[in-house]
Image 1 (tube, rainbow, N blue to C red):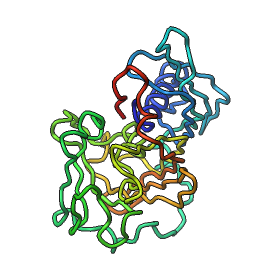
Image 2: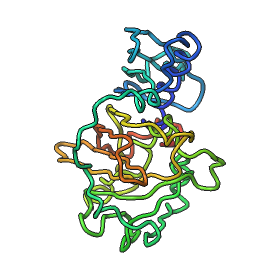
Image 3: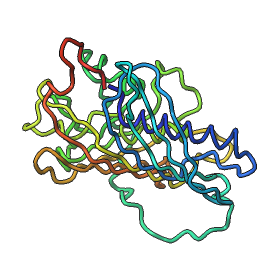
Length: 280
């Protein structure tokens, strides 16, 4: 099934298009925040997004977007998101207050890109992680792939990486805002680093995810060429845990933060009787 980050980006993209077409005078093309809940199993194929505008404002507006599919002939609600829409470029020049707060990831913990190790998923995963395979991932020096990508200093609960579009993706403008929404949940979760979770026997399902976009791309650019990503998983009780993701630009400034609630499920929950396994 499609990853939660991909579905959330479908909804935020639909709302952005709606505001561009139906409320152009507001000039609010960007998803400032989104909270997406995944309600039913998504499938590859057609879907329809219905949008309900809750409030129109000069600086920010609010909308609810719902994704529906009809995999067996009956329409079902797959996901819904509450989205705050705004204009990141206008925020940058608004004169609003910026507080001198240290970034959550110290500069000393951001490893040198040139000294990192590129990690590539084994071929059998490419079938299930098609979207993630379009991204080049550089991990801290000393990282080894032996069934996991445990952080060489902080261990299995942390995942650090520099990311950029891979040449095979065909993308030329870097990560735009819609890609940022997707990147919050578009990788092999650090939970797989723990020996209690076995690839082929367990998988992760996202209950919900919240994304907060802190700043837009550099002036004159449509996106970021590369970003630093840190994912940290919290306590896991009874098959449920939280994961926090922070994205930094090359200057070390926070671009976006996200939090998701995840479930650890048995592999049998990933396929339906008589059907091929769903792809993530």
